[in-house]
Every structure is written in structure tokens, then in C-alpha cells.
Image 1 (cartoon, one colour):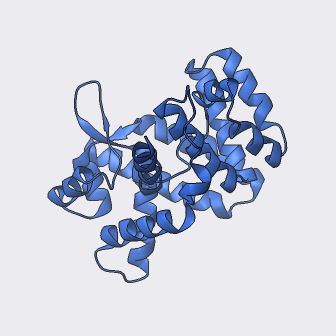
Image 2 (cartoon, helix red, strand yellow; image 1 turned 90 degrees about the horizontal axis):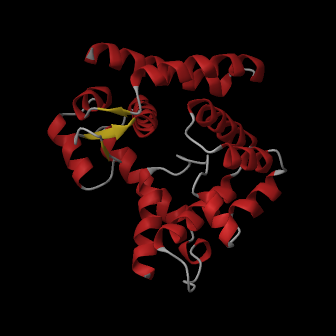
Length: 232
């Protein structure tokens, strides 16, 4: 079973690469196949499998997990596992730097991620001043979506629509919010940006069901979380 999971993940990585260079019509046919493979793998991957895919030892991976440089979630069984989306991004980035001849590829990727997080996220601009009634989770969501708004593209909207469709099929989002997000995502990019960054009670509630998950990597997300905590 572990070997099968690793083969599936390798196939998913290959499909992700192919989608980026494929014609839009072909890409639309490839995406459902990739998503089916992702469903077969499941939402998380065990550390032993992740370590093999990244080409590092389990103790080395554990150190990255302990320092929060690689995202983890706790499963209902109480195990610490890595989100599939996080692992896929890491495997692609690690493969790329290895192809460039870099040694200690995982360390290089994490170092580069931290540098980009510092250089590309203007905390003073994306963090709102604390207002009466703001809760910490709402501040994090607002800051996150301000960064997302800066990165909006047709590809990002396409991914959000597909995620929304999947949530609707699986019953993971209330139809009311699914309908509202569908309307938001049908608007021009500038209008979407304005909606997702509005600092209003309705926008705060809407962001709780946001389909823009996974836009930031773990280093960027942690930079925002830590900044919000400091601002408290």
C-alpha cells in the first residue's frame, strides 16, 4: 500500500506539470483525472511516505515538522500527517532545485520560501489595525485574502471554482454560501479582490467558507499568523 500511494503521488506531480503547459482544452480534461488520483491518495500523507518522496530521512523530516517549516495536521486517529497539497508543492520544488544541481534540496527550498515570504508580503499593508469586534481568526483570514487579492489570476479563479464544485458535490459547504461564492467568482478580477478583502461583518462570514485555500505556502502563512499574534 505505501508503494502504491507513492506511485499515485508521483503520477499526480507529473500531471500537475503537464497541466501548466497543456492547451486549455486538454488541461480541462486532465484536471478531473488528477483530482481522482488525489481522492485515491486522501487528504494527508504519512511522514514515512513523505520522507521517501522528498528523498530525506524520517528524522530529518521530523525536524522540519517540529520547527513548523512543513505543515502538518492531526488526523482523527491522533497521527501527525502532512496535507497532500503541501507535499505536492514541496516535491515539485525539491525536484526542480535538484535538477539545478543543488545539494540538500529540501533545506534550499525552505530557505528560499522564507526569503520570498519576507520579501513579497508587506505586513504593514496587509494587516489591518485591530478594531473592536475583530477576532484573531478574522484578522488572519483578512490578511490572508489581502495577499490572495494581490495574486489573483484566471488560473487561481479556475482552481477556486473547481474546489467549490467539489465541495458542493461532497456536501462540504452550505448551498447558500456555495451560491454566493459562485457569484463572486463570476465577477472581474478587480471586483473579486474587493469582495474578498472587504472588512465588513458579511465579508468576515463569507471568508469562513473561502475556496482560496492553499494559495500561500507554509512559510507565507506562518509569517501572517505570527504577525497577527504579535499585533494582539
